[in-house]
Length: 312
Image 1 (spheres, helix red, strand yellow):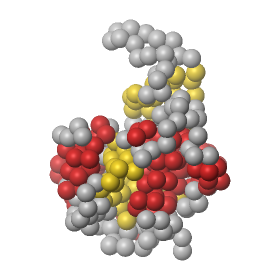
Image 2: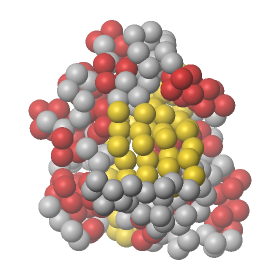
Image 3: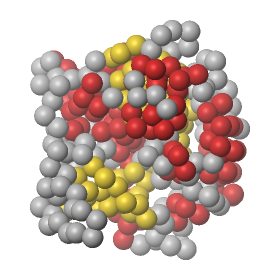
Image 4: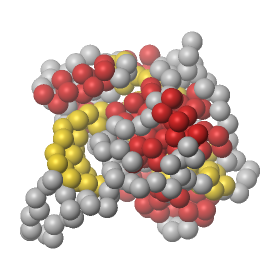
């Protein structure tokens, strides 16, 4: 069987609003474009699926317009849903404010994904196969009713399953009793510079990458995503290695980190080395930020064309 990427976390709706700049507190600003799309972990699943790796969404999804939107978007990308529809509420949503420099700021309102039930977690655990790559987000771990369930699921994964943790912007809100067991089980940790700083106290990316790797089990690795600069790869027994990025003109960074994680795991699933997978992930993220919208990761053909053109 093909190795699958299984997202154990949240796929929610994204209300994306383009603005010239964030308003001052108590102020207002007029948006230039608004779009309602699937978001959250959807972007990671899409990035993997478009590069040829089977992808499965293993989180709750609700009854209502946001749940309908999410399911339609997943089906359109060929992503399987594992759990049945919840009838006790709708899927949540995020307001993503994208400023004139392409930077994004989020406000999230969770729905049924914040109420994962024990039977659902057990059903997910039962469906995970040997060889699967499981992606877990810090957004889910930060939810009081969900984090402990997912931490137990993560620590109970068989040895043949690869676990990747993306700590997400809410990493500082994850209780240590939830986060530490997941870090001890994780095979990979992929974080952006801000998240790495919150977790390690280091501003320097090489030092932060080394400190991230030190928080993991001896055989695990860490990836520090550094935007246009590429990423830092910290492998066991080696100094962190800088993997250069691809200079592009960014028009929308929303979903870039998700594209990076999804592409990295997709290529690992296909047998690439971590260093080669990291370069591929840098290219996928660079491609994504040159397009408007949250789920703009490339297909294999688009990625090959991007790389053939030197990343231009």
